[in-house]
Length: 99
Image 1 (tube, rainbow, N blue to C red):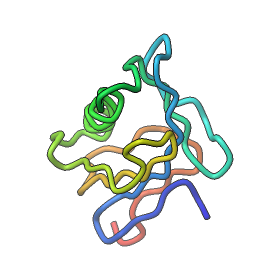
Image 2 (cartoon, rainbow, N blue to C red):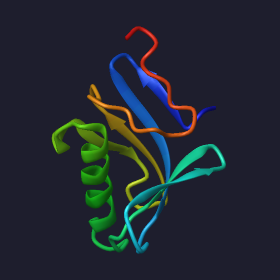
Image 3 (cartoon, rainbow, N blue to C red):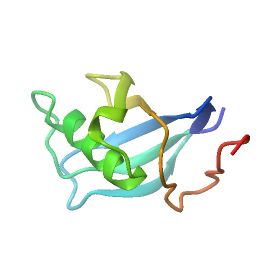
């Protein structure tokens, strides 16, 4: 399994989150997941909210188009990005097959 897959026009990411990092950034792969470092602490949903906002900015969509599908209280998360407008340079990330 890859760290991402397309579901129609939506992009599904399998992520490994590292909260309380020195800066927000993609940090390569962690096994079969995309490692994401975030400055937010892992308390009261702050890291999750920060993750969704970070991904919305990177993929050029409103925050309402990014949702957490699984992993609310875990470092391993699955995130859906509805109709991403831009794709960052990430290892192996390919455009939607029918685009």
